[in-house]
Length: 288
Length: 159
Ligand SMILES: Cc1cc2nc3c(=O)[nH]c(=O)nc-3n(C[C@H](O)[C@H](O)[C@H](O)COP(=O)(O)OP(=O)(O)OC[C@H]3O[C@@H](n4cnc5c(N)ncnc54)[C@H](O)[C@@H]3O)c2cc1C
Ligand code: FES
Ligand code: FES
Image 1: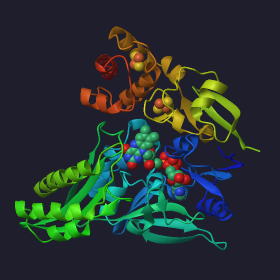
Image 2: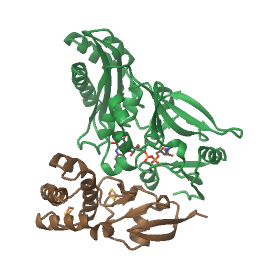
Image 3: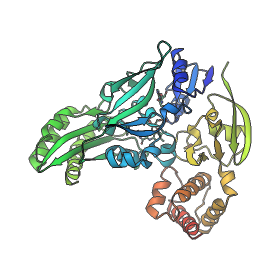
Image 4: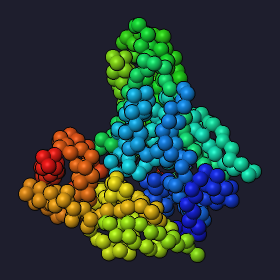
């Protein structure tokens, strides 16, 4: 294990981004990914370990106009306890309800979940369905600057994001879905929360008379990153969710995923799960 | 030179000051540096809950927490829970219900159960099962543990 030469605990975003600008920094939030990954030797520490827990700009959940801003340090427990998240971002709330154990939820942050960029990351699936974007902060020349990146562009592959080493993930912004939007998150694993998802689905839509509008569907653990399913959404958009439409949606979905076989499931089983569970989730969502 | 961190925190109500290597876990610090061996090392990966402690009133896996991150915080371990009223209630309920066999999971479960009862006095079985999801027991099959926690939760709600 590489030695940590410096341990930093900045107390403002300006200070944190200044430390990042100097380079060779490992960011620490809840530590639930970082500690096991470094102890197992899968990830090596940079010479500077920066604990961002005391940076106030990374805290809090707030409604700002048509957007919900969730600070990077917000824990899964805080998301579960938020009436705003439960009321308006139901599929994100459900994903948090399926996340690990109480002990992990109390420590794990949404920023850590995003930056860890697991193809099975539980908050990533609903956040992608909800068109979230991440706010990245850096201090290239004396002043803190931020850029906003759609989540779909932020995630590049397993454990890989477009975050530059000098950038900090400050927050994730979620546009409020239209009134009447309802959906469901489903995660398949053998131990309810603690399992890494074999597959996961976040799906939602708005009922407009007999037909569906604003259909959003995202999948986890069936591609190198969590993915949106635009062709599946197009099949459902403006249609009544009858048996023929659901069958067409499943057909489209199976064309959009590229599952692999690993210890948790074979690619065949993942396809079966996506087909069957997508149908179930859509049927539930349509009844809401 | 590996970084050393000077930290100060409260441990079971007592102020502590310590210098720890930056890469050390809170679990290693508690067991190896401070000699508090009630907190157990089961998996070291957040799966078993044997290392559960309270930090600022919430439970976490101490094997997943950096010791340096304890700075400025309030830690309560099984040694602290054991001497509290909630701990005594839980211990009596564990004994009365036969919820302890080898006992390795017991400290973590008692810390987690004390937090669960604090948050949900009078918790029902579903809430208890959900609350102790992160604690593995290889011996009891959980039935007696759930009964014990339910008994302690009921007693608490009657206070
Ligand atoms: C037993 C167990 C069960 C788990 N179950 C689940 C589960 O059910 N679902 C799930 O999705 N995940 C699960 N995880 C994975 C993990 O808990 C989550 O990914 C968690 O959200 C990570 O957050 P953290 O704050 O602990 O991140 P950390 O470990 O602190 O950091 C994770 C990574 O992100 C980087 N980072 C963190 N914050 C920032 C920031 N603000 N800016 C830039 N980089 C940053 C770190 O450098 C590190 O590379 C589990 C882990 C364990 C050990
Ligand atoms: S030792 Fe920490 S969860 Fe198992
Ligand atoms: S009593 Fe032996 S592990 Fe639970």
